[in-house]
Amino acid sequence: MDFTIRAVRPEEYEELGDLTGFTYLNDGLLLHGEDDFYLAVLRDTARRARESEVLVAVDADGGIIGGVTFAEGGTTWADIAVPGEAEFRMLVVAPKARGRGVGEALVRACVDRARALPGCARLVLSTADLMVSAHRIYERLGFVRTPERDWEPIPDHSLRTYALEL
Image 1 (tube, rainbow, N blue to C red):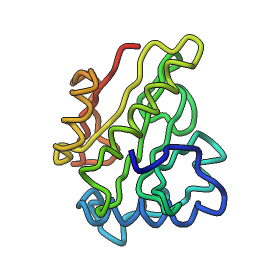
Image 2 (cartoon, one colour):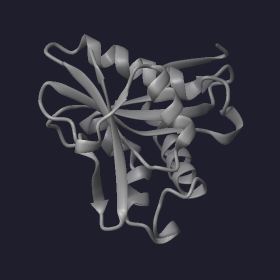
Image 3 (cartoon, rainbow, N blue to C red):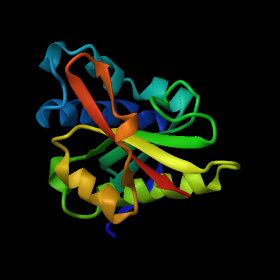
Image 4 (cartoon, rainbow, N blue to C red):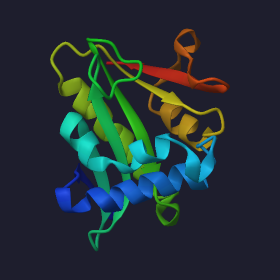
């Protein structure tokens, strides 16, 4: 691996926020483009880091090439995870770093983190239908579809869910 996974640092908040917002915009994941209310949430890495765990993938030069938010069930950043579960969200990989295993390494880091949590039975996530390459990573790592938990954060924007029993 020519990159490292670690906790985000305060001086990197803006860079990761920009990458996260750019990725969601570029990949067509925001229904209202630049006017989408969620864009500000995606860019606010400082808040995410205060209220959850934020991991980054950094290349040999220290540049951020990916990131993910990890939350314990029942906390502010857990959309679907309940107590006894963990969840990851906002998984992004810079376009220039795709195909190098960055996304899978970030997911594996979340799996390791969930396994280390006392009483954590599963790791869950929500994903858009069009994120096919991400679905392949999840399935390769043993996540299974949980259609009974699929949901819509806003009308007409359905998300599919996956879970990994720990």
